[in-house]
Length: 459
Image (cartoon, rainbow, N blue to C red):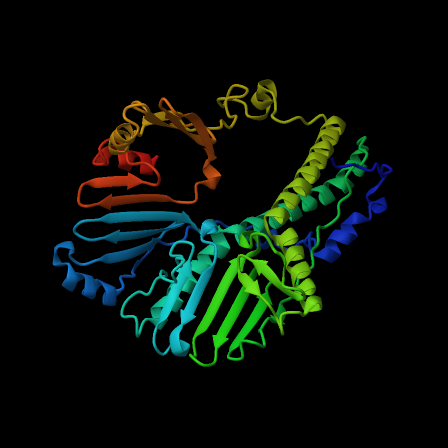
């Protein structure tokens, strides 16, 4: 629980020194300066279409299995999310993922880019057997296209992902500080009764510089690893001297996962995170490992998910104090908002005055829906395997205001699983064998209910 410290009331604007602190930190612009530079203008990102079909694989599959036709893969980047569509004569799959959930964007250059490149992300991850990723076009000459895709995905992550969220919180926080700083002289001039509880102080205005660490393991004599901690994200660069392959991996601090020190054997230590595992030097460089872990954790606290929560808490405190200032100013000037209908009639004679409360903003909520997503094929198999003991089960999907619920009922099970919409990473729509449809974990009916599956995916 936050503890507010009372400050002595100020009798005049000259007695209020925090405006100078804000001016020095850049949180308040100078008198007469255009403030529009501080306000972010929302601009819709253009929709971009890319043909990311791997032509090598498509040609091979077309020769081996002509009945499937050409395997096409298209990527669509719109304002809020990226969509990956795969299609042939028999199957269709659609993956949608918001930019904030892309995780890493990694480019692997073969022979330094001379023999093509591969794009990795949480949309096209690498499997346990080393397969996966995206190699659009002809694999031997697609470096330019892969770099263009990686650059565009990274740019959209920065303006629509976790980086944009923390930067907008910074902007809102500084804007509230501006309003509070400007109200103080007016409160003193009007003689308002106001006592400050939460001081006006900028929150860490200094941006952390880049930190570069050599994380190469001397036992891997042909591999050079560099960890670059940038202001908003972490970057790993790996170069294999023998094969001339290069890997560039970027991930926001909100997507680093759990960063800790990994200890093995007797004296071997390393850094573990979603960026990978690093054992610098001969594997026993404790001082560097501790330094890297502390620096990564500190940047996660400032610019990751914990930083967002902390910034929101500080913002709520400042907004609460701003409301107290406004209430004090209203009490001193008797200028209340919204004005009464009588005051509106005096101010705008002869014009139609809306009734009180008619202009209030109403929050629109989503409609709660329920769907029967019972898989009949799975139910039949379960009844046969249990000799009818399990009975005929039903699976229901309840879409409520903030979460979805998966309700499963049969003679052996009666469960209700809750999943918040924020944890639903992607909506994957799949068509298999011409007439079988699936969305994420649901294949309702006999598997060929296209209308219901498309409705579920859209909802």
